[in-house]
Length: 263
Image 1 (cartoon, rainbow, N blue to C red):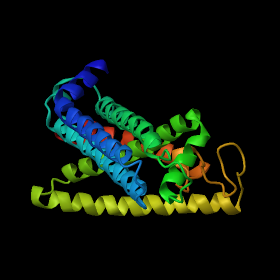
Image 2 (image 1 turned 30 degrees about the horizontal axis):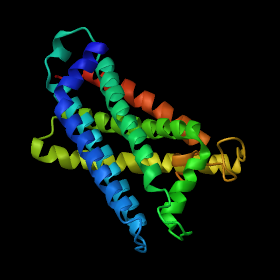
Image 3 (image 1 turned 135 degrees about the vertical axis):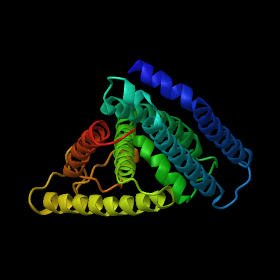
Image 4 (image 1 turned 135 degrees about the horizontal axis):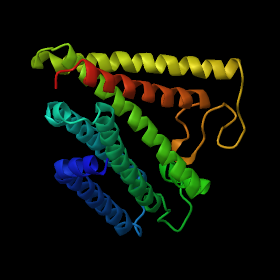
C-alpha cells in the first residue's frame, strides 16, 4: 500500500502543490485584506470575504476530486493492473485513501482559516449574519470539528467511488470518446437522483417509524448536528446507508475491473 501511495504522490505532486499553495495564498490575501480594513466599517465586507473564502475552499476541494478521477483513469490505462497480482480493489482503495486524506487536510486548514475570518474585527457589536453564524460553530469544540471533517470525508469517498464505477461502466461498454463524457454526466445525474431518493426514504422511515432525536450529536429533527456538518439533513440511517453503499460500489467496481475490463 505504501508503494501505491508513493506512486500516487509522484504522479500528482505538482497538482497537489498548486492546489495547496493556491488555496493558502488566496486565503492569506483575503485574511490580510480583511484585517487591513478592521478600522474602517464597511457594511457586509467581512461577510463577503467569508463567502469568497468558502467558494475558494469548494473549488480547491473540487480540484482534489478531479485529481482523484485523473489518477484513476491513469491507473486504468497503466499496465501494472495487467501484470501484477495486486487486485483492482487495492488500487482503488489506495487512490481513495490518498485523495480523501488530501481532502480532509484541506478541510482542516480551511477550518483554521475560517476561525480567523469569523472573528469580529470591529469593537462594537455587529449584525453580520454570516460572520456570527460561522463563529458560533466554533462553540461546539474541537472533537465535533474532527468528526465533521471525517463525515465530509465519507461523503467525498462516496462521490469518488460513484464516479469510479461510472467511468468503469462507460469503459466496459466501449463507448466512443466523443460520447463518453456525455454518458458519464447522464449516469452521474441518474445515480444522484437514485441516491437522493433512497436518502429521502430513509429520512421518512426514521421520522415516522422510529425516532432518534435529542441524543448527543442528533437534534430534535433526527438530523446529525455536528458543528460544520450541521444543516446537512443527514440521519443515522442515511449515514449507515452511505457507508454500506460505498463498500458495495467499491467491491463492484473492483470486480468489474478484475473480471470484465480489458485494461
